[in-house]
Length: 66
Image: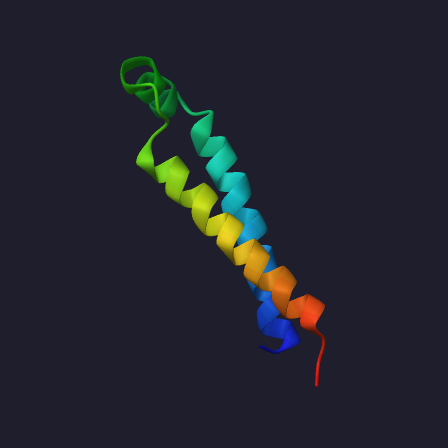
């Protein structure tokens, strides 16, 4: 994986994580937690996708170029 792609994955991952945190604090997620005890599926998938993209981006940057 080359460095620009790794950097793009890292940036996208951080953005997705931020959106996931914002979504988890939203009104709809609060109502979902009130009735089901869990946040909305959207916030969960944003957090998972952001985590995976961030780890992939960091892994690509950490490997170095050959």
